[in-house]
Image 1 (tube, one colour):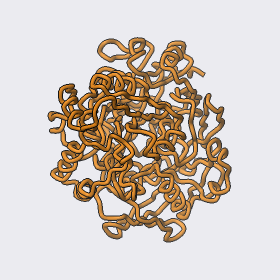
Image 2 (cartoon, one colour; image 1 turned 45 degrees about the vertical axis):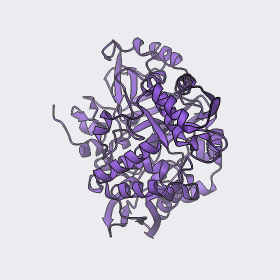
Image 3 (tube, rainbow, N blue to C red; image 1 turned 30 degrees about the vertical axis):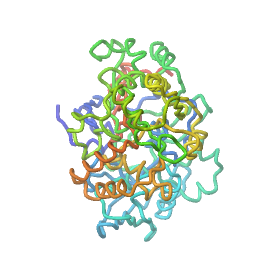
Image 4 (cartoon, one colour; image 1 turned 45 degrees about the horizontal axis):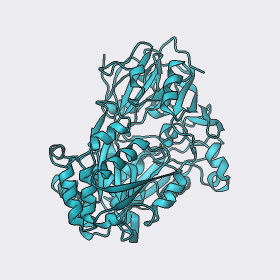
Length: 538
């Protein structure tokens, strides 16, 4: 069958590429249905009961499952590290390079949201300012100096400095909404019945149980040739149902109560054979993600982890592969880290994979612990938010006990965890997932760029001018030697520890033939393709 380019994959609905062999955006082969018509419903498992459908909670685990569907963005990238010429417009009609730090973006003059509100340049400006102020779009805070409305349909972006990948990162992912609606809506309205600019709207929300998205019958982009793959409308409704326990997810799949769900190794034998192939009545969809689990170390004076030798001792005492297994990552579906990033980002040096990155070594851990001069009976606090796999912390706790370190595990709801995280007296180690938005430097910048974190230095209170110089040089040049320089310095200082990357493994009923994915490795549920005899669980 004919293979199509990534640009063609993005531009056009699944129906427009029916029958073609597709190369997934992150390199995973997917295939479009021979008859990609609109089905009545698909039921999707949501892995946590807390969800917020408002536009500026980027990075939230559930947010990634729906935001392309209900919110428009200026552009979308076909892959990490794509150039501006390779990006595909959604709301953006054209982009003009004024200088190496100034870009003018023209939007379509007929955009309206699901409540009939027009979207103009001033709304784009408002949305980007909200995204910046939310603290969740680190690349906007880092790369964007200003955003200005030039006229009703032209927005000018000015960068903090000329930097490879900066404008591309800025033009991706920020949800665009009407400023007047957002400013006048209540918090509940924003979170449960937003004015949507994407191909779907929010039909209903049952707190902690489910939410339902329905096709936006008046979606502003009526020209099918200008719709990207995330703008497809292959199902009339998408029902997102909450099931938090993996054993219950498996039962729901087996009983045909849901259509598609992410699984882990604890239930894989119910759906996969020993080679990872799907059993009868199921299909398997693997998405390669540019997100990775890490331990951030509190480097403030309030924490014992400000001691470099203690940080090194902790890192040597951790067996990242066993922690990955404790996370529930399927065999062959995860990769142990060799840096505070993963290989999805452009510029990654695969030579690092062959080098010692605090490889599990109890003798070295004990040696570093002695060099720390902190003595015995050390107690550290690991903070994590609800929704993080508990196996990570429990495995680390057992490993650190071998060298005499007591690890106190504190788990808190997302809002409480966020507040505690910003208090340097509340934790020593923090478990989080970090994303790479384009280059490997983007993941580093999100946590360690002082232009984002100000007087605090970095997310974890590192005050190190050398670190900043190396980071900013690597970000601005993308030269392999400069990237190496940051990697080796950061590794030596051990300001944080990369653990592993767990790719997504989704199991669906066999009526779902393909689950296409974005450059971020998230499934595009709006563009899933179905067999002729598909019948939803609902």
